[in-house]
Length: 188
Ligand code: ATP
Ligand code: MG
Image: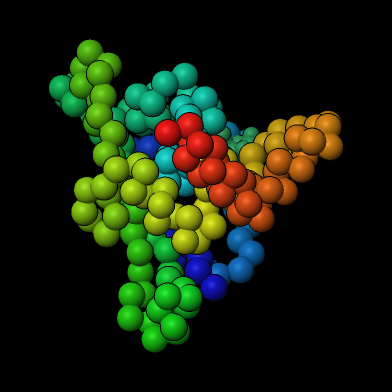
């Protein structure tokens, strides 16, 4: 099974320094007082893998994701998050464990005026967000998917009508991706 073995947050939201979070396969619980940064870890995952808008990460705009206490006197401030997957059991590896790790990094640089740049890297090499998403499809991780279930999602799903709920099942089953491709092809 492919799983996330490490998340490293650097100046991201409430995480002031560089914080590595090691994860084991299976079920992990993060506990702590209100406002201690538990949900910010999930926001870091969404940020790094390009799965949400700034609102989806509970920020007005991307620059708000940089730790407030980080480098207020500098011309540029920066936040970054790395997510490392253990892919030694990925299907394409045939269990030979040749490529054991696969790391995605996203770096956000904010200038004094509030202008910013955002860059993605796969195993240290620059890539575009669509290249990243293409790779993430291999692990059934989709921006429209429900790989990360946020506070409020559950109540939203309960109150949906059956057509909307069916669309979620299509996403989870991976069918919606083909529907989107068909629609895109028909348009061009
Ligand atoms: P709860 O149990 O209430 O869900 P939580 O542990 O999930 O709490 P988070 O929502 O992860 O808490 O963290 C909220 C905290 O993160 C707030 O104290 C907020 O001030 C802080 N925070 C958010 N963005 C930044 C930022 N850019 N710089 C510094 N702190 C930030
Ligand atoms: Mg929370």
